[in-house]
Image (cartoon, rainbow, N blue to C red; front, side, top):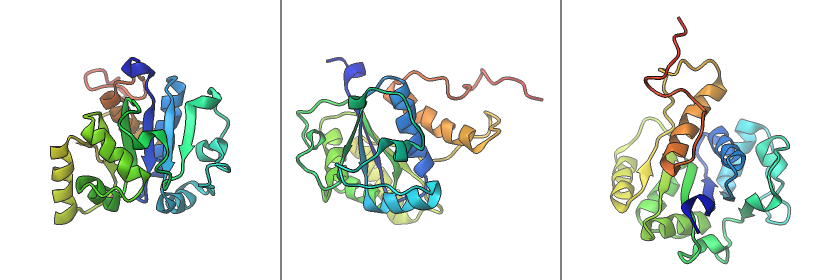
Length: 210
């Protein structure tokens, strides 16, 4: 199985930034990629505050339309939701091949668990699997300011093989909307996953808007 045929794991945890995670899943599905989705209870609370939608985290009740906010056309088997306590899920094992994992947004608590190998739930375990199997693991923290402990945890996670990709939108793309700013971060994630996209113009290709 080639890397392009392998699924991508996306996890949302309890940091601000739910729109980043939703947009990332949407872009991956539009690109024809299969997604294994994880959402922590804290992420569901943030999701309600930021997206004004209630998520049911029971695997039998999860509704992709509620998560995405609208009907998105994709094969039914391309989005698979796992409960965060389900260690029987395939992504809990390194024998199940994936193309990478993104925790977006990544809470500082989740960052700490990943940096120190604390597999307390399926999100932590799946991240640990990606590190031990030397597969891409992208952590997208959204917090400010950063204290010494999370900074050290970022160093530890980086040394273990993760990519720390903070939710820091750029302005050289001349964003006109909040969606433009969200797309910048999603574009950088896709770059690291080697997912082709046309979400934002690249440096050196910026149209003159003056």
